[in-house]
Image (cartoon, rainbow, N blue to C red; front, side):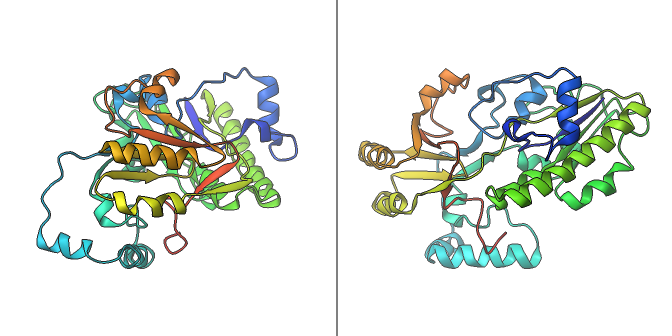
Length: 325
């Protein structure tokens, strides 16, 4: 079996102009739609068949208790955030990836990052192992019987075609990550988006035809779309207001979701009031995630979440910064 995983393949955007071959696939073959968990990191659940509160891959998890800080750590923490993040971004550009280059070290140490992307970015054989002890459909066949290919660039798709659907592997899974990453920066730019879509559509067609010749089953998989961005939600006033609560709160901001940890009653009142005043989003306390199939037993992954409405993006975020991207 060959699984072509294309994050950001948005179903409402699939038309004959941008996706001619995928349109034909949808017409000629059966397809199934799934109800996702409220995250863009659904792959661990797709691989294992268990929900996030079991495998724990949900995002940042608060580290408690806090480790004592040495003198070097205290020295770095005494520097303004703009100094430490600019330095990290420069290292990121000049010497290679720095994990979360835009996040000040004083905040980064507060979290254990339980996110699947950090597994994928490492050695690809790690993806073929059980996740948090749960076997996945990539780990069941055994060593040497499956492969995960992570392609971060759209111009790398033609290069990997020659090595796919070859040999006697039981399962191959290819992630076309470059498509997702490109659309993050296009923000709905129509000509560029259509060009990228047609390039991925051609890759899917070529790979599918190769699978037919090699007698391989073929699965096209996407766990989330990419809504065109109509506006941004400026988080800066809310974050500035939290300066006086720095020891009472922690936060982590992604493109469409912000998580807050509230350590005092004062912080809880203040943050909930701030979030309620933001437009184009929804406030979700952690216990209400149970309505969506996520049943954590505590607030280690966040006391309260702010989810952006479809078509809106949070700004700033802890992942993206012009200096580092």
